[in-house]
Image (tube, rainbow, N blue to C red; front, side):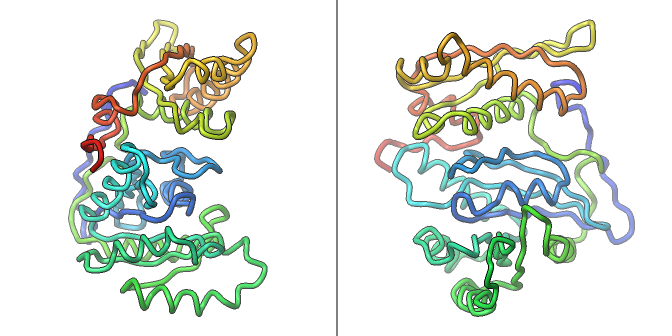
Length: 314
């Protein structure tokens, strides 16, 4: 697999084929990335226990029967505080507006928090076809309140259908997938049947490394970091050499990322390299560098993530 996206669209237009965009929207940590990965059948979006992991719209491609679904994993919808937060929330709503339908994903155990209210208020008045998916039902010891919760949220959200699922275990996901497959418009497929995402490998590689930063570092540091793939070289022995820069906002953060004697950055590199080798199906040589830069105010970083650069104070 080369860096360039050489997997051409099939343009398949067999009898009864369907194609459409499905936006997966919800509060941070509702399980959006886990659901997209589950529907696609492979990892296309990074997952972390920490909230607000997804920063851009990630598109995974799933085949369900005769339907090809482009699943848009959007950033979480929450009360923004920083410029990056505002750009992420705007991207989430833009992803929903551009889709053929949306899945509003709600953590069934946290349905009463302010982020869910924000999601429902944002949907009000928007001409978006949508379904409700109550996620993480496998974690509920008592499932009896789910019907009342579904009725309450449906009354506020104007949903066409309601599903009770566990994106982690797969419970109920097949029913949701069949609904989506029936609901997208008729039309030819736009991508090859074996293409799981339209994300360039350079960007996916940077996301994998960022996921390891979220997994291995704590408190606010992951949110103060960004990763850029600066070089990608196909080597004659069949391996890939990848160079990436991790940007942080302060010198003290740079020291934490590197760790004592380079231990932390070595662990980040080892974990990221192992997963990247599985994705590209060849040996990977990964070289990480850490630089201090006010990347949160750099319009170029936003463009790389597919985000609009909001004016300060907007």
